[in-house]
Amino acid sequence: MSNPARPPASGALAERPPLTFPPGFLWGAATAAYQIEGAATEDGRGPSIWDTFSHTPGRTVNGHTGDVACDHYHRLDSDLALMAELGLKSYRFSVSWPRVQPGGSGPANEAGLDFYRRLVDNLLANGIEPWLTLYHWDLPQPLEDAGGWPARDTAARFADYATLVADALGDRVRYWTTLNEPWCSAFLGYGSGVHAPGRSDGADAVRAGHHLMLGHGLAVQALRAVRPTAELGVTVNLYPVDPASDAPGDVDAARRIDGLANRFFLDPLLRGSYPADLMADLAGTTDFGHVREGDLATISTPLDVVGVNYYSRHVVAAPVPGAEPEPYWRAPSCWPGSEDVRFVTRGVPVTDMNWEIDAPGLVETLRRVHEEYTDLPLYVTENGSAFVDEVVDGRVDDADRLAYFDAHLRAAHEAIEAGVPLRGYFAWSLLDNFEWAWGYTKRFGMVHVDYDTQVRIPKSSASWYAEVIRRNGLAAQ
Ligand code: FCB
Image 1: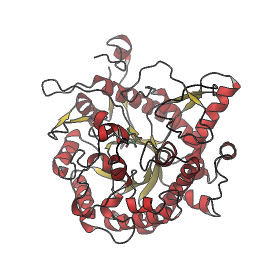
Image 2: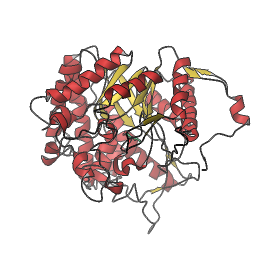
Image 3: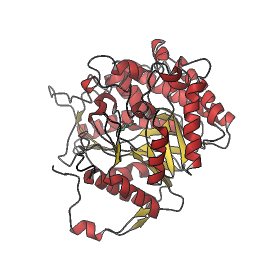
Image 4: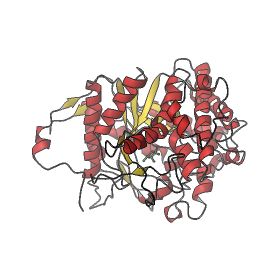
C-alpha cells in the first residue's frame, strides 16, 4: 500500500522537537449521533432526514444507512471504557433530536434523554468533560415535511429543543455547541442535495443557512436562560480559499468561494452582518427577503467559545467555458451564484476522501478567525482523515492517519505560538462510522470497527494519541 501522507522515514522527522501544549489544553475526540448510535427505531426515536435520505435508493454508497451504525446505543459501556483507556479529557458527542423529541416539537421523550443522561454521568464519573452538540444534521423528519430549514419556524423549533435538552442536562454539561457545520446542512442538504434532505435549490440553501443561524442565536439565548454559566458556542467548517494564480478572474473566484464557504457564516455570527460582496454575488439567487429586522442581532448573540472544524483547503480558478463540472461538489451545485468556479487540484497528497492534506491551512484558518473576527477562545472541534485501513494479525497500523494528526497538531501549536487562544483539539473521530453519503466506505476512526461483528480495535493512531494526551504534547521525533 502506498502511503502518500507518511512523513519521510528519516531527516525532517528526526529534527522535530518536542512540543508542549498550554496547561489544561482540552484533548478530545468527537462523534455524531447518527454516525454511531444505530438503534434507529428504539425507545421512541422518530425518523430524521438522514433516515429518510439513506433509505432512499441511490442516495448513499451501497444504500448504507445508520440503522445499526456502530451500535453505540447498545455498547455505551464498552465505548466509554475505550474513551477512558485513551485518557480523553473531553468527548464531543451530538444529541439526536429525533431521539429526544421525535416529532420535532412537543414533549420530551424521556427514554431518549435517559441515554444521554447515562452517557454524561459516566463521562463525568471517568473524569471526561462532556461536550454536547445539539445539532449534527439529524433534523426530525416531521420538521422537514413542514418545510425544513428553509422555513423560518424551524429556527423556533430548534430553540425549544435546546431548552428541553438544557432542562435535562444543563446541570451537568458545561460545553454546548448549537450547530455543527451549518454550511453542510444548508449547502449540501438544500443546494447540491448530496446530503439529507437531498433538495437542490440555491435560494432554499441560502434561506436554510439563515434560519440555521437564527436557530443558533435563539438557542444560545434559551441555553443562557437555563444555564448562565455554560460555555456556549457554534462549530463552523472553514477552509482557506486560494486563487490558483494571481489572474484577476482566479482572485475573484477565491473571493466568491470564500464568501459562500466561510464569510456567509462568520460575518453574521461574529459581526452581525452579511458581507456586501456575498449578497451581490447571490443577487441572482435570492433577494434576502427572508432576513427580518432583528435577525442579525439574534444571530450574533454573544458566545463564549468558537469551534472550528478543519480538514483541507480550496484552490479555485475562474470559470472556463464548457469545462466539465466536478462530481461531488457540483451535483448540481453547492455554490449558488458561483456555480462555474473551478476547483483545482494541486497534485499534493490526498486522503481517501480525495481531500488534499494541508496542515498549514489550519494555522491560517485559526489565525484568521482570531485576527479578523474574535478574541474568544477557539477549539478545533474536528480534524482528521480517512484512509484505507487493513487489519493484520488483529492490529491496524494506520501510519497515514497518525502522520495527519501529527502534522495538524504541530500546526495547532504553531497557531498558539502566533497568539491564537486555542484551548482544545478534538480528533475526528473516536470510531470508524457512517460517513454520510459515503456510508461505511470511508474510515476516519482512531478505533477500527468491524461492522459485521462490532468488534473494536484501537489503531496505532489511538495509542499514539493517548501518549500525546498523557504528555500534553508531542514527543521529539
Ligand atoms: C465533517 C462532519 C463529520 C464528519 C467529518 C469527516 O464535515 O462534521 O460528521 O463527516 O466531516
